[in-house]
Length: 465
Image (cartoon, rainbow, N blue to C red; front, top):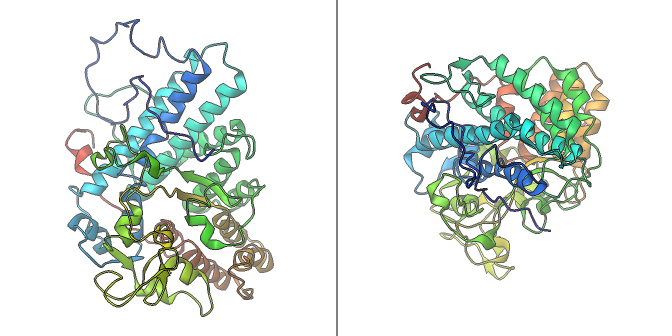
Protein backbone atom coordinates (compact mmCIF):
# COMPACT_ATOMS: atom_id res chain seq x y z
CA UNK A 1 0.00 0.00 0.00
CA UNK A 2 1.51 3.34 -1.02
CA UNK A 3 -0.48 5.59 1.26
CA UNK A 4 -3.93 5.92 2.71
CA UNK A 5 -6.15 8.49 1.05
CA UNK A 6 -7.42 11.62 2.75
CA UNK A 7 -11.10 11.40 1.84
CA UNK A 8 -13.48 13.96 3.30
CA UNK A 9 -16.61 12.46 4.78
CA UNK A 10 -20.13 13.70 4.28
CA UNK A 11 -20.29 14.54 7.96
CA UNK A 12 -20.24 18.24 8.63
CA UNK A 13 -16.95 18.65 10.47
CA UNK A 14 -15.68 22.02 9.29
CA UNK A 15 -15.30 23.43 12.81
CA UNK A 16 -11.99 25.11 13.55
CA UNK A 17 -12.25 28.87 13.24
CA UNK A 18 -12.23 30.51 16.64
CA UNK A 19 -15.13 32.88 16.08
CA UNK A 20 -18.66 32.17 17.23
CA UNK A 21 -22.08 32.21 15.63
CA UNK A 22 -25.68 31.85 16.75
CA UNK A 23 -26.60 28.18 16.46
CA UNK A 24 -29.83 28.32 18.49
CA UNK A 25 -31.90 27.39 15.47
CA UNK A 26 -29.84 24.35 14.59
CA UNK A 27 -31.00 21.95 17.29
CA UNK A 28 -33.07 19.68 15.06
CA UNK A 29 -31.58 16.54 13.53
CA UNK A 30 -32.51 15.43 10.02
CA UNK A 31 -32.32 11.61 10.01
CA UNK A 32 -31.60 11.67 6.28
CA UNK A 33 -28.34 13.60 6.76
CA UNK A 34 -25.13 12.68 8.49
CA UNK A 35 -24.64 14.21 11.92
CA UNK A 36 -23.05 13.35 15.25
CA UNK A 37 -26.30 11.69 16.25
CA UNK A 38 -26.42 9.40 13.23
CA UNK A 39 -22.70 8.94 12.58
CA UNK A 40 -19.92 6.98 14.35
CA UNK A 41 -21.99 3.79 14.11
CA UNK A 42 -19.41 1.67 12.30
CA UNK A 43 -15.66 1.24 12.20
CA UNK A 44 -15.65 2.61 8.65
CA UNK A 45 -17.40 5.80 9.70
CA UNK A 46 -15.06 6.34 12.63
CA UNK A 47 -12.07 5.72 10.39
CA UNK A 48 -13.34 8.19 7.80
CA UNK A 49 -13.91 10.90 10.39
CA UNK A 50 -10.43 10.32 11.79
CA UNK A 51 -8.86 10.44 8.35
CA UNK A 52 -10.45 13.83 7.73
CA UNK A 53 -8.42 15.20 10.67
CA UNK A 54 -5.28 14.73 8.58
CA UNK A 55 -6.58 16.66 5.57
CA UNK A 56 -5.54 20.17 6.53
CA UNK A 57 -1.91 19.10 6.83
CA UNK A 58 -1.99 18.65 3.06
CA UNK A 59 -3.44 22.05 2.20
CA UNK A 60 -1.64 24.99 0.62
CA UNK A 61 -1.51 26.67 4.01
CA UNK A 62 0.54 23.75 5.32
CA UNK A 63 2.81 21.24 3.61
CA UNK A 64 1.55 21.81 0.08
CA UNK A 65 3.04 25.29 0.08
CA UNK A 66 3.33 27.71 2.98
CA UNK A 67 4.66 25.39 5.68
CA UNK A 68 7.97 25.09 3.82
CA UNK A 69 8.11 28.71 2.68
CA UNK A 70 7.42 30.16 6.14
CA UNK A 71 9.93 27.97 7.97
CA UNK A 72 12.72 27.81 5.41
CA UNK A 73 12.56 31.50 4.51
CA UNK A 74 12.34 32.88 8.06
CA UNK A 75 15.18 30.64 9.21
CA UNK A 76 17.60 31.94 6.56
CA UNK A 77 17.81 28.78 4.46
CA UNK A 78 16.43 30.47 1.32
CA UNK A 79 17.00 33.64 -0.65
CA UNK A 80 14.62 35.01 -3.29
CA UNK A 81 16.04 33.82 -6.59
CA UNK A 82 13.21 34.11 -9.10
CA UNK A 83 9.75 35.58 -9.20
CA UNK A 84 9.11 35.15 -5.51
CA UNK A 85 5.90 36.90 -4.47
CA UNK A 86 5.95 39.69 -1.91
CA UNK A 87 4.26 37.71 0.86
CA UNK A 88 6.99 35.07 0.70
CA UNK A 89 9.72 37.71 0.65
CA UNK A 90 8.27 39.02 3.90
CA UNK A 91 9.39 35.79 5.57
CA UNK A 92 12.94 36.25 4.35
CA UNK A 93 12.95 39.88 5.54
CA UNK A 94 11.18 38.97 8.79
CA UNK A 95 8.61 41.71 8.29
CA UNK A 96 5.46 39.59 8.08
CA UNK A 97 2.30 41.66 8.50
CA UNK A 98 -1.26 40.75 9.46
CA UNK A 99 -2.36 40.70 5.81
CA UNK A 100 0.25 38.15 4.72
CA UNK A 101 -1.60 35.64 2.55
CA UNK A 102 0.45 32.62 3.52
CA UNK A 103 0.23 33.35 7.22
CA UNK A 104 -3.54 33.73 6.89
CA UNK A 105 -3.82 30.36 5.10
CA UNK A 106 -1.49 28.67 7.58
CA UNK A 107 -3.48 29.99 10.55
CA UNK A 108 -6.90 29.22 9.13
CA UNK A 109 -6.16 25.72 7.87
CA UNK A 110 -4.37 24.77 11.07
CA UNK A 111 -7.35 25.83 13.18
CA UNK A 112 -9.67 24.04 10.77
CA UNK A 113 -7.62 20.90 11.36
CA UNK A 114 -7.96 21.48 15.10
CA UNK A 115 -11.70 21.84 14.62
CA UNK A 116 -11.96 18.44 12.99
CA UNK A 117 -9.97 16.89 15.80
CA UNK A 118 -12.19 18.61 18.37
CA UNK A 119 -15.29 17.27 16.66
CA UNK A 120 -14.11 13.68 16.77
CA UNK A 121 -12.83 13.93 20.36
CA UNK A 122 -16.00 15.62 21.59
CA UNK A 123 -18.14 12.85 20.10
CA UNK A 124 -16.42 9.97 21.87
CA UNK A 125 -19.68 9.21 23.67
CA UNK A 126 -21.36 8.65 20.30
CA UNK A 127 -18.95 5.93 19.18
CA UNK A 128 -21.08 2.84 18.76
CA UNK A 129 -20.65 0.07 21.31
CA UNK A 130 -20.00 -2.41 18.49
CA UNK A 131 -16.68 -0.74 17.65
CA UNK A 132 -13.82 -2.46 19.54
CA UNK A 133 -12.46 -0.47 22.47
CA UNK A 134 -8.87 -0.60 21.22
CA UNK A 135 -9.98 0.77 17.87
CA UNK A 136 -11.84 3.65 19.52
CA UNK A 137 -8.81 4.46 21.64
CA UNK A 138 -6.53 4.36 18.61
CA UNK A 139 -8.72 6.74 16.60
CA UNK A 140 -8.88 9.14 19.52
CA UNK A 141 -5.09 8.84 19.77
CA UNK A 142 -4.73 9.92 16.16
CA UNK A 143 -6.96 12.93 16.73
CA UNK A 144 -5.13 13.84 19.94
CA UNK A 145 -1.74 13.63 18.21
CA UNK A 146 -2.91 15.75 15.30
CA UNK A 147 -4.48 18.38 17.55
CA UNK A 148 -1.23 18.57 19.52
CA UNK A 149 0.78 18.87 16.32
CA UNK A 150 -1.46 21.60 14.92
CA UNK A 151 -1.15 23.56 18.16
CA UNK A 152 2.62 23.03 18.30
CA UNK A 153 2.94 24.63 14.87
CA UNK A 154 0.78 27.56 15.93
CA UNK A 155 2.36 28.30 19.31
CA UNK A 156 5.90 28.21 17.94
CA UNK A 157 5.02 30.66 15.17
CA UNK A 158 2.66 33.08 16.94
CA UNK A 159 3.19 32.76 20.71
CA UNK A 160 0.02 33.40 22.74
CA UNK A 161 -2.96 32.10 20.72
CA UNK A 162 -6.60 31.10 21.20
CA UNK A 163 -6.79 27.62 22.71
CA UNK A 164 -9.93 25.77 21.60
CA UNK A 165 -10.36 22.25 22.94
CA UNK A 166 -14.09 21.70 22.55
CA UNK A 167 -17.05 22.63 20.35
CA UNK A 168 -18.33 25.45 22.52
CA UNK A 169 -18.54 28.90 20.96
CA UNK A 170 -17.93 32.22 22.68
CA UNK A 171 -19.49 35.50 21.74
CA UNK A 172 -16.91 37.45 19.78
CA UNK A 173 -14.44 34.59 19.68
CA UNK A 174 -11.87 32.91 21.90
CA UNK A 175 -9.34 35.10 23.73
CA UNK A 176 -5.64 34.29 23.68
CA UNK A 177 -4.14 31.73 26.02
CA UNK A 178 -0.55 31.83 27.22
CA UNK A 179 2.20 29.84 25.59
CA UNK A 180 2.48 27.82 28.81
CA UNK A 181 -1.20 26.89 28.72
CA UNK A 182 -0.98 25.83 25.08
CA UNK A 183 2.01 23.61 25.84
CA UNK A 184 0.14 22.08 28.78
CA UNK A 185 -2.70 21.11 26.42
CA UNK A 186 -0.23 19.73 23.86
CA UNK A 187 1.47 17.53 26.46
CA UNK A 188 -1.86 16.26 27.74
CA UNK A 189 -2.92 15.24 24.23
CA UNK A 190 0.37 13.53 23.43
CA UNK A 191 0.37 11.66 26.73
CA UNK A 192 -2.98 10.12 25.81
CA UNK A 193 -1.86 9.55 22.21
CA UNK A 194 1.28 7.56 22.94
CA UNK A 195 -0.56 5.31 25.37
CA UNK A 196 -3.44 4.51 22.99
CA UNK A 197 -1.95 4.47 19.50
CA UNK A 198 -0.83 1.23 17.80
CA UNK A 199 2.90 0.69 17.54
CA UNK A 200 5.01 0.80 14.41
CA UNK A 201 4.41 -2.38 12.44
CA UNK A 202 0.92 -2.74 13.85
CA UNK A 203 -0.54 0.60 12.80
CA UNK A 204 -1.71 1.04 9.21
CA UNK A 205 1.11 2.47 7.14
CA UNK A 206 0.91 6.24 6.99
CA UNK A 207 -1.12 6.72 10.15
CA UNK A 208 0.22 8.03 13.42
CA UNK A 209 2.04 5.51 15.62
CA UNK A 210 2.78 5.44 19.33
CA UNK A 211 6.45 6.06 18.51
CA UNK A 212 5.55 9.18 16.52
CA UNK A 213 3.68 10.51 19.56
CA UNK A 214 6.72 9.88 21.75
CA UNK A 215 8.96 11.60 19.19
CA UNK A 216 6.74 14.67 19.00
CA UNK A 217 6.50 14.78 22.78
CA UNK A 218 10.29 14.80 23.01
CA UNK A 219 10.45 17.60 20.45
CA UNK A 220 7.85 19.59 22.39
CA UNK A 221 9.74 19.22 25.67
CA UNK A 222 12.97 20.42 24.04
CA UNK A 223 11.20 23.38 22.45
CA UNK A 224 9.69 24.43 25.79
CA UNK A 225 13.10 24.66 27.43
CA UNK A 226 13.83 23.40 30.92
CA UNK A 227 12.23 20.01 30.17
CA UNK A 228 15.34 18.23 28.94
CA UNK A 229 15.10 15.22 31.25
CA UNK A 230 11.48 14.75 30.17
CA UNK A 231 12.56 15.00 26.53
CA UNK A 232 15.24 12.38 27.08
CA UNK A 233 12.74 9.99 28.65
CA UNK A 234 10.19 10.48 25.89
CA UNK A 235 12.68 10.03 23.04
CA UNK A 236 13.99 6.80 24.56
CA UNK A 237 10.64 5.24 23.62
CA UNK A 238 11.17 5.81 19.88
CA UNK A 239 12.44 2.35 18.99
CA UNK A 240 12.29 0.04 16.00
CA UNK A 241 13.80 2.52 13.51
CA UNK A 242 17.12 2.60 11.68
CA UNK A 243 18.89 5.04 9.40
CA UNK A 244 18.58 4.02 5.75
CA UNK A 245 21.89 3.49 3.99
CA UNK A 246 21.31 6.12 1.30
CA UNK A 247 20.43 9.55 2.72
CA UNK A 248 18.78 10.53 -0.57
CA UNK A 249 16.16 7.78 -0.18
CA UNK A 250 14.41 9.89 2.44
CA UNK A 251 13.20 12.44 -0.09
CA UNK A 252 11.83 10.43 -3.01
CA UNK A 253 8.54 8.69 -3.72
CA UNK A 254 10.31 5.33 -3.81
CA UNK A 255 11.71 5.92 -0.33
CA UNK A 256 8.44 6.76 1.41
CA UNK A 257 7.70 4.97 4.69
CA UNK A 258 11.17 3.49 4.92
CA UNK A 259 12.79 2.31 8.15
CA UNK A 260 13.79 5.89 9.03
CA UNK A 261 10.37 7.48 8.61
CA UNK A 262 8.52 8.34 11.82
CA UNK A 263 5.83 10.75 10.56
CA UNK A 264 5.00 11.81 7.00
CA UNK A 265 2.35 14.01 5.38
CA UNK A 266 0.99 12.23 2.32
CA UNK A 267 0.88 13.31 -1.31
CA UNK A 268 0.04 11.36 -4.45
CA UNK A 269 0.81 12.67 -7.93
CA UNK A 270 -1.67 10.26 -9.54
CA UNK A 271 -4.59 12.26 -8.15
CA UNK A 272 -3.81 15.24 -10.40
CA UNK A 273 -4.10 18.98 -9.86
CA UNK A 274 -7.73 19.26 -8.83
CA UNK A 275 -8.37 22.35 -6.73
CA UNK A 276 -5.04 22.52 -4.93
CA UNK A 277 -4.76 26.24 -5.61
CA UNK A 278 -7.94 26.94 -3.63
CA UNK A 279 -6.09 26.23 -0.42
CA UNK A 280 -9.12 25.09 1.54
CA UNK A 281 -8.21 21.37 1.76
CA UNK A 282 -11.64 20.30 0.52
CA UNK A 283 -11.35 18.06 -2.50
CA UNK A 284 -7.61 18.65 -2.27
CA UNK A 285 -5.62 16.95 -5.03
CA UNK A 286 -3.20 15.54 -2.47
CA UNK A 287 -0.21 16.99 -4.29
CA UNK A 288 2.37 19.54 -3.20
CA UNK A 289 3.93 22.54 -4.96
CA UNK A 290 7.25 22.03 -3.14
CA UNK A 291 9.12 20.65 -6.14
CA UNK A 292 7.89 23.27 -8.62
CA UNK A 293 8.41 26.20 -6.26
CA UNK A 294 11.97 25.28 -5.32
CA UNK A 295 13.43 23.78 -8.52
CA UNK A 296 10.85 24.23 -11.23
CA UNK A 297 10.30 27.95 -11.04
CA UNK A 298 13.40 28.42 -8.86
CA UNK A 299 11.56 30.95 -6.74
CA UNK A 300 14.08 30.38 -3.96
CA UNK A 301 17.56 28.95 -3.66
CA UNK A 302 19.65 27.85 -0.66
CA UNK A 303 21.56 30.65 1.01
CA UNK A 304 25.34 30.77 0.95
CA UNK A 305 25.36 30.47 4.74
CA UNK A 306 23.61 27.12 4.46
CA UNK A 307 25.90 25.89 1.68
CA UNK A 308 28.99 26.95 3.63
CA UNK A 309 27.87 24.88 6.63
CA UNK A 310 28.71 21.62 4.83
CA UNK A 311 32.10 20.09 5.48
CA UNK A 312 34.38 19.06 2.65
CA UNK A 313 33.46 15.53 1.65
CA UNK A 314 29.93 15.65 3.05
CA UNK A 315 27.88 13.77 0.45
CA UNK A 316 24.69 15.32 1.79
CA UNK A 317 25.64 18.49 -0.10
CA UNK A 318 25.16 16.80 -3.47
CA UNK A 319 22.12 14.93 -2.17
CA UNK A 320 20.44 18.18 -1.16
CA UNK A 321 21.52 20.59 -3.93
CA UNK A 322 21.98 20.65 -7.70
CA UNK A 323 25.02 22.47 -9.07
CA UNK A 324 26.20 23.40 -12.55
CA UNK A 325 27.64 20.23 -14.10
CA UNK A 326 25.26 17.88 -12.28
CA UNK A 327 23.03 15.59 -14.32
CA UNK A 328 19.27 15.02 -14.09
CA UNK A 329 16.52 13.36 -16.15
CA UNK A 330 17.90 9.86 -15.58
CA UNK A 331 21.44 11.10 -16.12
CA UNK A 332 20.75 12.29 -19.67
CA UNK A 333 20.75 16.06 -19.14
CA UNK A 334 23.40 18.31 -17.62
CA UNK A 335 22.80 21.54 -15.73
CA UNK A 336 24.67 24.18 -17.71
CA UNK A 337 25.09 27.90 -17.17
CA UNK A 338 21.73 29.63 -17.43
CA UNK A 339 19.79 26.42 -16.92
CA UNK A 340 19.53 26.26 -13.16
CA UNK A 341 17.33 29.27 -12.50
CA UNK A 342 17.93 33.02 -12.71
CA UNK A 343 21.53 32.60 -11.52
CA UNK A 344 24.08 29.78 -11.56
CA UNK A 345 24.15 29.25 -7.80
CA UNK A 346 23.20 25.80 -6.50
CA UNK A 347 19.48 24.93 -6.41
CA UNK A 348 17.46 22.60 -4.21
CA UNK A 349 17.53 18.90 -5.02
CA UNK A 350 15.86 17.65 -1.83
CA UNK A 351 12.20 16.74 -2.46
CA UNK A 352 12.68 17.21 -6.23
CA UNK A 353 11.63 14.89 -9.06
CA UNK A 354 14.24 16.04 -11.56
CA UNK A 355 16.47 13.03 -11.02
CA UNK A 356 14.13 11.02 -13.23
CA UNK A 357 12.30 13.59 -15.36
CA UNK A 358 13.05 16.50 -17.66
CA UNK A 359 11.02 19.13 -15.83
CA UNK A 360 9.16 19.68 -12.58
CA UNK A 361 5.43 19.72 -11.99
CA UNK A 362 3.04 21.56 -9.68
CA UNK A 363 1.62 18.15 -8.76
CA UNK A 364 4.46 16.52 -6.86
CA UNK A 365 3.62 13.33 -5.00
CA UNK A 366 6.68 13.25 -2.71
CA UNK A 367 5.59 12.96 0.92
CA UNK A 368 6.75 15.59 3.40
CA UNK A 369 8.92 13.90 6.02
CA UNK A 370 7.99 15.67 9.23
CA UNK A 371 9.94 13.49 11.67
CA UNK A 372 12.77 11.15 10.68
CA UNK A 373 14.83 8.88 12.93
CA UNK A 374 17.90 11.03 12.19
CA UNK A 375 16.01 13.93 13.78
CA UNK A 376 15.20 11.72 16.78
CA UNK A 377 18.85 10.75 17.23
CA UNK A 378 19.95 14.38 17.12
CA UNK A 379 17.20 15.33 19.59
CA UNK A 380 18.44 12.53 21.85
CA UNK A 381 21.93 13.98 21.65
CA UNK A 382 20.57 17.40 22.58
CA UNK A 383 18.40 16.12 25.42
CA UNK A 384 21.31 14.08 26.77
CA UNK A 385 23.75 16.97 27.00
CA UNK A 386 21.18 19.55 28.14
CA UNK A 387 19.96 17.26 30.93
CA UNK A 388 23.44 16.81 32.41
CA UNK A 389 24.48 13.68 30.55
CA UNK A 390 27.98 12.92 29.37
CA UNK A 391 29.67 14.27 26.26
CA UNK A 392 30.32 10.70 25.10
CA UNK A 393 26.66 9.68 25.34
CA UNK A 394 25.45 12.76 23.49
CA UNK A 395 28.06 12.41 20.76
CA UNK A 396 27.20 8.72 20.43
CA UNK A 397 23.74 9.70 19.16
CA UNK A 398 25.13 12.42 16.89
CA UNK A 399 27.82 10.23 15.38
CA UNK A 400 25.27 7.61 14.35
CA UNK A 401 23.93 10.20 11.92
CA UNK A 402 27.40 10.96 10.58
CA UNK A 403 28.15 7.23 10.22
CA UNK A 404 25.27 6.62 7.79
CA UNK A 405 26.63 4.47 4.95
CA UNK A 406 26.22 7.12 2.26
CA UNK A 407 27.60 9.90 4.51
CA UNK A 408 30.44 8.17 6.37
CA UNK A 409 31.98 11.25 7.97
CA UNK A 410 34.55 11.09 10.78
CA UNK A 411 33.11 11.00 14.28
CA UNK A 412 32.94 14.29 16.15
CA UNK A 413 35.03 14.38 19.33
CA UNK A 414 34.66 17.56 21.38
CA UNK A 415 34.36 18.24 25.11
CA UNK A 416 32.12 20.50 27.11
CA UNK A 417 28.41 21.23 26.84
CA UNK A 418 28.85 24.33 24.67
CA UNK A 419 31.03 22.51 22.14
CA UNK A 420 28.71 19.52 22.01
CA UNK A 421 25.68 21.77 21.47
CA UNK A 422 27.53 23.58 18.68
CA UNK A 423 28.22 20.22 17.02
CA UNK A 424 24.56 19.20 17.33
CA UNK A 425 23.39 22.52 15.93
CA UNK A 426 25.71 22.10 12.94
CA UNK A 427 24.65 18.51 12.32
CA UNK A 428 20.96 19.38 12.50
CA UNK A 429 21.37 22.12 9.92
CA UNK A 430 23.18 20.02 7.31
CA UNK A 431 21.15 16.85 7.94
CA UNK A 432 17.70 18.50 8.09
CA UNK A 433 18.21 21.36 5.61
CA UNK A 434 15.00 22.23 3.80
CA UNK A 435 12.91 20.13 6.18
CA UNK A 436 11.42 23.06 8.12
CA UNK A 437 13.55 22.25 11.16
CA UNK A 438 15.89 25.22 11.33
CA UNK A 439 13.08 27.60 12.40
CA UNK A 440 12.64 25.64 15.64
CA UNK A 441 16.37 25.11 16.13
CA UNK A 442 17.05 28.85 16.07
CA UNK A 443 14.53 29.33 18.87
CA UNK A 444 16.30 26.73 21.03
CA UNK A 445 19.95 27.27 20.20
CA UNK A 446 20.04 31.01 19.45
CA UNK A 447 17.13 32.29 21.55
CA UNK A 448 15.51 33.60 18.38
CA UNK A 449 12.33 35.39 19.48
CA UNK A 450 10.85 36.33 16.09
CA UNK A 451 7.13 35.51 15.84
CA UNK A 452 4.55 36.33 13.21
CA UNK A 453 1.58 38.53 14.12
CA UNK A 454 -1.87 37.00 14.44
CA UNK A 455 -3.26 37.29 10.88
CA UNK A 456 -6.22 39.27 9.60
CA UNK A 457 -8.38 36.20 9.12
CA UNK A 458 -8.61 36.06 12.91
CA UNK A 459 -8.33 39.73 13.82
CA UNK A 460 -11.26 40.72 11.59
CA UNK A 461 -13.65 38.21 13.13
CA UNK A 462 -12.48 37.76 16.71
CA UNK A 463 -13.25 40.77 18.90
CA UNK A 464 -11.74 39.17 22.02
CA UNK A 465 -8.12 39.42 20.96
